[in-house]
Amino acid sequence: MRLGQGRYLAAGERPGATVTSVHELTTADGATVRGVLATVPGARTVVCLMHPRQDVTHHALVPLLLQAGAAVWTQGSRSPNNDLNLVHEQALLDVGAGQVFLRERFEDVVVLGHSGGGTLFAYYLEQAASTDRIGTTPGGRPVDLAGAELPVADGAIFLAPHPGQGRLLLACIDPSVADEADPMSVIPELDPWNPANGFAEPPASSSYSAEFLAEYRAAQRARVERLDAFARESLAATAAARKAHKVTGAAVDRRRALAPTIMTVFRTDADPRNVDLSLDPSERPYGSLFGTRPDLIDYGQVGFGRLATPEAWLSTWSGLSSNADFVRCAPGVTVPTLFLELTGDQAAFPADSARMIAALGTAPIPGGDLTTAKVRGLHFGAALAPGEPTGNELAAAEIATWLEKRHPLSPPP
Image (cartoon, rainbow, N blue to C red; front, side):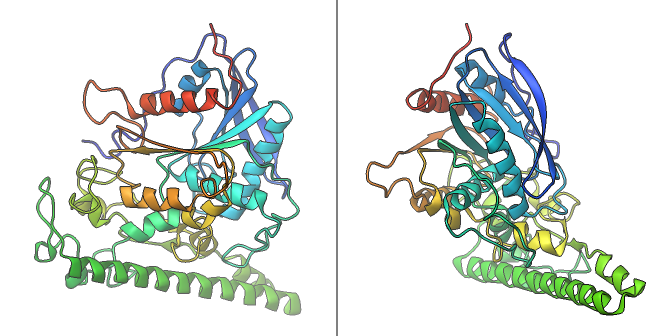
């Protein structure tokens, strides 16, 4: 299988009556974001798809949602397809601009977060409903969420949400890196690809001991703690340079304040669950989201959180510092909610999903409206086996049923 195969799926045909328009919006802090609105005649409900760092314009669910009779809004953040500077608190302002735009045009607005979009919308809904919104990023940058218009959606759909970019990375970062400047450096006793530690030659499933996994998970946390410390030291040096420039006015201090620190994080595709299928078992195939050989991909260029500014690292990729943590945000999600799991998911595992569902604020509310379901499919919506319906098709059927019970739909003839 080629690297990334199954990650980008072709979308089906949109209804012939679909009208598509592109819109440029200004966020509360003056950034520019763009969205694409696809609608069918008479649509009164709009479903919003967004991911913090990916372009979802051609998401495979779009035609299926249009066929069900909903309009679909696909939006990008201020830095689509480039998470070098991705700050989740700013991304909430991006979401807010889209929600304001849609509130003026539709009766009902429903957010749909797939994968990392799930935590983005969970974070957004938590902050939108809060009377004490976050005022600074984890790196200390002020962000005026309190002064921004952040409408609360009428419903939320979470499709194969993982626990958050940071939590995802915390589970798959390789703790056996001995030297952050050397991608080939290895601590043998922590090496997940060492047969002495339980690794088996693919495609055979590996078998890690409980003792190794405990040490491994603790070492992953320790590595992220070290990266967090480096990020904070870098931000402190930048702040000191800005402060010095205010006093001296010297160009050299201004240059020091502007000079970027780019964190290069090697080896981030090493979650033992991807190669030891006995861990939190499911219908998932061997391998990670990036391919069938994590033992090789871990050393390659592709992976989560590989390049980031210190600010973006702390806000998005640190599983210890990021606010964009689904379980942390979930109690603030109290709107009617549909949570869909894909049974072959290689990023959101059953135990993760159970924790996220249990944390949602919808269920504990008297009369709360929480629906959960599982459908066969891979993380990005491909079919589990040849000849089967895709995960996206199965998910779309669940979504359409859930929507029609709660929101007005206008299926095209």
